[in-house]
Amino acid sequence: MLKLFRTRPKLNWLHIESETDLQNALSADGKVALFKHSTRCPVSSMAKNRLENGWEKEVSHIPIYFLDLIQYRELSNKIAEVLGVEHASPQLIVIENGTVLYDASHHMIQPSEISKHI
Image 1 (cartoon, helix red, strand yellow):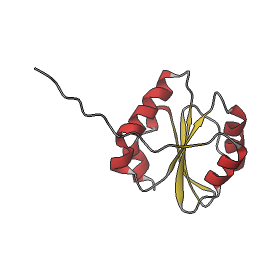
Image 2 (cartoon, one colour; image 1 turned 120 degrees about the vertical axis):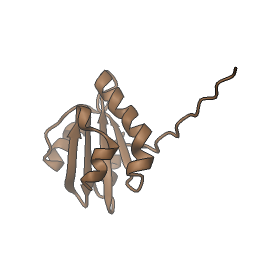
Image 3 (cartoon, one colour; image 1 turned 60 degrees about the vertical axis):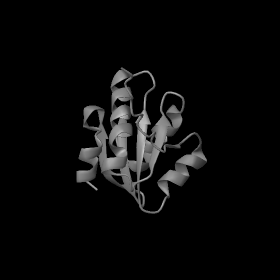
């Protein structure tokens, strides 16, 4: 018997790969989320999967930016400096008009939790 597997829709990540991308994310109108991901960390991969599986259901109205913090560590440091949020990996930060509304790391990065705080 042939089993059919539904593929989950991929999250529409907005990538931060330059200072300009970061400024666009930080100056965006309304709420946005920043996900700092370590490509070397299994906990970060699990957090990324949780976001991809639940974002559309829980918080689809918020754009989400993706930062590969291994490749762009300077940009990750800049986020911590500008927003005044201590660096963590993985980390999800929700901001609105440059103000931090919510910050989570590791196993607390879950769309259902994020939706409660925004």
